[in-house]
Image 1 (tube, rainbow, N blue to C red):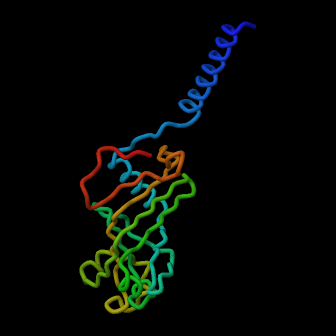
Image 2 (cartoon, rainbow, N blue to C red):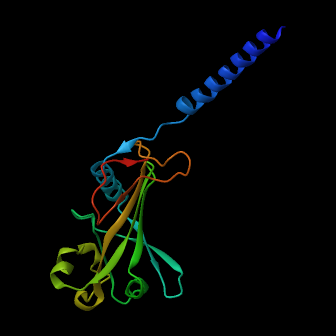
Image 3 (cartoon, rainbow, N blue to C red):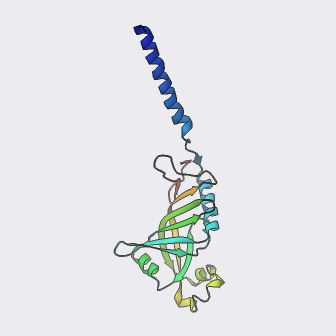
Length: 191
């Protein structure tokens, strides 16, 4: 083989390797999909309603986290989530000390989940307590006026994954798509 043929062979080999490398990057990995804010919120609502129960995660005065299963009401038009609870519960004391909470909904059938990071407030208004009430709770709250309290969680950020709808995290860091509240909506959210 002369040097000219050798260089041509080497160049061809380099081009084939570059093409193979490029092909696996472009075709071997899914390119990120973009979803509108409205689509992400609508899908989150579906997951939250299908899951029915969620975990409410709070932080105590020593910085320890506590999670418990809750029976929430469906999110309102602003994605605020309401719960009923015992006014003397540990979660109430923890919210009084630190309003930052996390809600976690999981639908194992899809599989899908929604995580909401937000701010909780305690509500003892009789009209709100009448509006956010389930008759199946009567046995838990014999004295609704004193023993029943509401928690309203206002979202700051929502993260969502729904395999069924193709809403998944990025391929490198597995960061799920998110929606931020309280600021101007973004045009498109990248997964």
